[in-house]
Amino acid sequence: MRRRLRILCILGCLGSPLLLANGLHATDNEHLSVVAASVSLRMALDNDDDDDNGVSDATQESDIALEDLLALTVSSDSELTIQASGGARLVDNGRALPSPAVFRAGAVPRVLYLQGARASTSAREARVSFRTANGASQELSRTVVGLSVLHGDNSRVDAAHDAVGVSHEITNAASLPRAATWQDSSTRDPDNIRIEVVDADSIALNATARLERVDDASGQVLGFLADIPLERPRVGVAFRSPFLRLVGDTIDREAPGVTSRVMQVALRDRVRVVYPSVGGASQDVRVGRPGDENGPLAARRGTLRVHILRVTRGGALSMGTNEASALAIGRNQVAIANEIWLQCSASFGAADQAFVQIVDPPPPALLAFADGDGLPAYGGGEIRFRIGTHRIGPVSTRPNAFPLETARDVALAVRRAGYRAEVYQNTATDFGAGPSADLVVRDNRGMPVAIEADGAFPYSTDTRQRVVRGELDLRDGLTEFDNMNATGGTLEERTMIRLIADADPATVDVFLINRFAEGTREGESFIEGDGASIVNTLILDRHGVFAERESWTQSHELGHILLNHPLHPDNVGRDRPWLLMDADASLGLVTGPKRLSWDECHRMTVESGVDAVPALMTRYRPRARP
Image (spheres, rainbow, N blue to C red):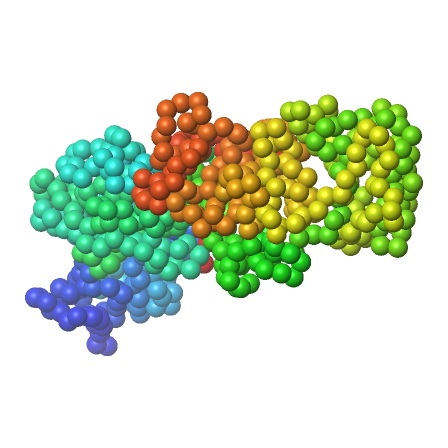
């Protein structure tokens, strides 16, 4: 029987009839076919971690991702032995094949995958030979090119155990070296990165590469730096790029003088090195480590609940020209928080999936006992009011009863009438005799219900312990706290927050209002470290929102909560207006107040991380791309 030879040359054969353009060599005419999906004689070292399981793809033994592998269609009429050497490895059905591997007659045709497991030290070093039982043979050779991202100290970013992060420095400052040589390191900013390429097939001293930002879930390329120059001092060593910088927001991305060196990213993006000389082969590292790990680069996720207030019930919105624009402003608050807190490997989720709602001012469903002064009851007074058609009271005040005790007595009467009653003790004001108390009334669905005076009767006749109804009226703005009542808030603030915010201590409630009544601020926050009765809440007015990327008010106030710290660095040290937590800086430029230090990121982990109580940040691992 005549023996047959069948080999596909994708771009045609060159030279000897047995030397093929795709790097295959044939020595017999037994029926043996090996078809490579790419004719490039180079392929990338598969040293990333595409499945994000903490094991380098080049050493993984099973469930190997096929993303960076070369498909080979192999066909033979008889038993086939395959031998890989020189940094090449074969993968079959996601499993690494031993070398040599033997396939019995009938086990092929099949599709195998060639993987670069070690960077080549000489051209065409990686080889795979195919030999049938009848003596027919072919050989495939490739140069495995190492593509790496380096840290600022020129150490390689190990994709399976390490990650990259955004810079904490001013983007176009001298901490981004402009004229670094091949051997130089980035000593002032270790977060700077550079590209390294090991290409034993090249005799050039210059090349180019591309850096891409890739969304991990969709695989979509969201941004890139093209034509990044690569240089090396001599043949035989690696190419290296200039130092590059990853940033979190558009102002930094467009920093004057460095736009060709800066790429914007988000938490858990893939940062992909593409080397055109390998036919577009690539390798990835990620921004931040998986959330189920510990360490400073482990991804963390917080939750913001954004409430946009109408000025009156059914009336004008506090911001935006219509509901759609108001909701967009609310979602943008989440996007801004993601941009800034990326410095600490923190995210608040996709802005388009965030909890954002437009709400009316709630009905007056709160009673405050001894608001401001915290005085005990004189005794002998009567407390009475109405909830709809139900008359509550009279409830007698007990001599020297603390505000909390009086509120609890009234709460019993409210519950007997069939309503829910929530009692809170407020933090004492600086001028108060003690803590005041609030009572919130809700129906059985949990909705606040209006409290009204019982005819001409006052809410209380006690001569020392006042009882007042809390109302939210934004027509004249929200009455803000001052230094005397900052930890407990004003009656109007407590009314808004207690009646609208959720009861989950692990979320941060964000209120967007029209303005503060006294105009003393653009935003404020309530934090646990103050011993406050209201915590994990921030309020922004129109000015705070519209100056979002100038003063970064929202992220600043969020910083007080996450760091659990009421002070500003310039309150206790020199003024550094580029820091996010600066007291009064405002500048919509790259030098604006938005930088966080590693110490502040560590404090966020301690005060709000997964081991804190409550844990405002949880372990974040978004769904990976299949």
